[in-house]
Amino acid sequence: MLLGVLIIAVSLAGCHPVPLSDSASKKGVGSIIGVSQANMREEWRIALIDELRDEIDKNDDIQMITTDATDSEGKQIQDIDNLIGYGIDLLIISPCGGNALREKIKEVYDSGIPVIVMDRAVEGFDYTLYIGPDDEVIGQQAGRYVADLLGEKGGKVVALSGKPASVQGEERLSGFRQIIDGQDQIELNILYPASETKDASYDVIAASKGIVESADVLFAYSDSMALGMCDAVRDMGLEGRVMIVDCDGFKGEDEGIDLVSQGRLKATVSCPIGGREAVDYAVSILKKESGVPKQVILRSNIIEKENVEESLAKINAGGDDDGRTIRVGYAQVGQESNWRLANIKSIEESASVFNVDLHMEMADQSQERQFEAIRQFIEEDVDVIVVSPVVETGWDEVLREAKAAGIPVIMSDRNVIVENPEENLTTTYLGADFTEEGRRAMRWIRDNVKSDEGGMRIMEIMGNAGASPTEERGEGFREILAENPSYYIAYSDYGDFTYEGGREAVRKYLEKNEWDIDIIYAHNDDMALGAIEELKAHGIKPDEDVKIISVDATKAAFDAMIRGELSCAVECNPMIGPQLMKAVRDLCSGKQMPFRIITDEQVFDQSNADDYIGKRRY
Ligand code: GYE
Image (cartoon, rainbow, N blue to C red; front, side, top):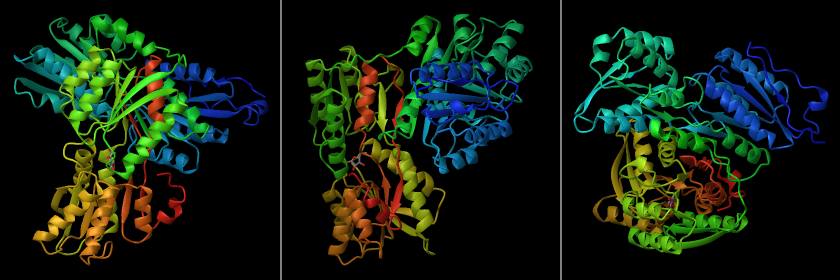
């Protein structure tokens, strides 16, 4: 029996969720989604609940129970226990504060109930899916906007930093400073309100008359802080003399968008809601569909008076898929690795399932050939272009050509770095978190390969120069390496992600040196396998004489772990076809594209390789 959607709104006074009647119990109802909201005070959170409800309404056999934690961590933990007591099948949570609820979320996730975390990023990966913004990027967008506003002449900027600051506040300010600190013509002053509220922000501005009077731009990383700023500036008689920029851009009275319309804010960087995406993915998780990513990072936009209407229209865009065949041109890297072969297969198989007419061009690791392919797709006037870029930089011109032709571009698997991100030359990036993969590799080494007195010598075999997985796997690895000084990189070489490249790196090293390496960190399996072959040819025993860690975790890597040759494989999932094709269809139906869609991954070693090899699909 389908009961339709039952929304149990819970009072704002902080009581328990209304118990479900027997008839609404799980039997016959389908699924219950519990939503634990941090508070129902902020406009945006109310909007999230509305958006979730509207979306759930479209699914006959899902019901939703909502709780309001009234900004109390203790209450939120209690709310979660209550929701579990009612037999929820999935939890959507927007946690109060930064990491306070992390343990609780992990507990629920470990118990087998899927958890979607929204808006406030929790550290670690102990949840099913995170949907929310990238706060550092939001801060960078604000920083670039302010730098542009002041131009070459520069000026004085005053920014607020809550004391203490929330995780997202800190990240936004750090992103902002990454841009502003590098500009000699800008002088930045930071003021510290006693909390991140409107009132504390008002007070600190009002008490800093001299600094504020001489400022050109004021920056706050949230709408409530910005409102306090706006009020203080008005009461100080400085309205119109100083420009105010903030982040959040929520809808509702006196929130960011409204303040921009009123002319009190010069601009706001929007922090999108994500309710629609949350329900979409919740349904996939409940149906146990494959291809659910680990993180969906929503896109934030700069909203000024001139584009308020357009921005609101975009935020509200419905997105109906008419089911037509979509023509996609795909500029693929080549066939350099086992990972790539699995990736190509996954994309080709999914294209037919999603009614996508796919034209894929292999570039044999040449950027020039990728340019040619993209120009050919523009000529063919395809609906969408997908690029897996060989290297990160140098794409601006060809991407501008695609934009001028009105063809949206999705970055798949690898990302690009463009000169000016506000040009919006690409719509979304879908792939792995390579930096995290690098961190995982080094964390595994730290935890599993004991350092001896002289320190541990690492040989790094990198992918091709300038590719995003090469750069980011290197960065993430070094991040953890820096915390562990008894390990160091003694030698680095490029292996271009190929088996031969890995062999060659070891061969070249042995031509000039006695073998004195303790650990090999290869940016992919193929290179690790090539290195293993070469080591064996020289009588060096893999895993015994030298530990070998790689990234990808293909079947061949599992075989090598089971043979006792490869020590550890950090997963990088190539099966992104379904997610990509879903993104293609969403894009063509006019839905707002997330900024990044990040795949789910694990770490394997010889202790668990046996348990997983049977389930390996690539
Ligand atoms: O790890 C490697 C491949 O871009 C993530 O490219 C991909 C990488 C992958 O050739 O094996």
